[in-house]
Length: 448
Ligand code: PLP
Image (tube, helix red, strand yellow):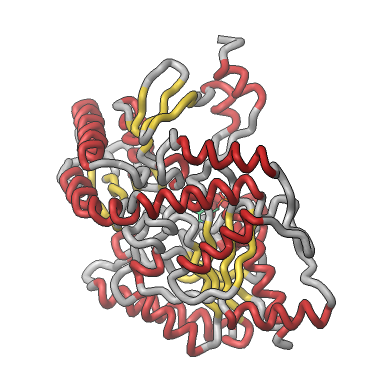
């Protein structure tokens, strides 16, 4: 229909992550409202938002306290910056709160507006620090294949997904990638998980040796890889990585953009996986994405050389208009209060067993290869079909699941789930029942 909202959208927007030519014809799904774990499209159809938007809406889609916090701050001071020596209460309170919650002692916070920006700036800070230490050749950064850290030039370079590099002339030369520690995808026939872990660590050692340890400044990793397809590293992986990094004086940056604020059943993914980073990057669930805000936390080892360098030069030559935006900061603070008061981290931990069992039950379905989860983030691995590769099959499953009233996301061969942290046990049952119905309908149409 030429004047429908779908047609106007397709005529006016370039959406991320679509085939533009296809989108011009097909249009998209218009979401109009939200309530709790549900969203509603413009025909009134209700969906369980089993991805919490983009892995981010911890408190659900209709939290009045966040609206009130935003309005109250809008009334008082709708905008001011934290540029140079100006500052304001909401940014200070939020910085203090983040330092209080941090999984390991952290010294300072810098605010940004998105996960990409936060990773990009952390990257610049790593380089600034190397210069400050008189090590201008220690600038390389190691990310991981299938790691996701955003799409700006530096962050997109640390990301290890070919689609985000492709025709964009990324990655930058300074960014190197080591193997992805997903046993289910990259374990070799006959290789035990422990052997796989040792191989992953050896790959990292080999890369560092090849490049020269004196040239490598930092290692980047998500505790659990999200956008790469919910990839949970094997036991001993993070412990081994940290040993190697310490040996070579390489900083560790934990990208908690998805894992942070309860997703894995602890406040931070670092706590679930025994990670002690030098810098922490947070976004998404910090404000339940009601307002765009992200932050970088750095420890003393990271901060002190930067502070010295800024004193030498006279200033830290960087700043964004929206850093620590007061409305975003006020919303983030209220969101964190809600997470704490309602013990949503505890809810994620308490429901993690039911979540895992639900996915395991679905993994018995003939179209499904296996399942994996930690806390309230998980995935089903879809089998290839006789006439379709697994990645296309996973897309077909996601589309059918959507027809059944659940929004999830296919990434490669995986079907990902990351529901709002307010979800209840009954709602989890509904979610998995709908996925089961979708799988049955597809199996009836095309036997595996
Ligand atoms: N880091 C991680 C782990 C992410 O999952 C994402 C987004 O999904 C980002 C960074 C980038 O965040 P943004 O999309 O806000 O730039």
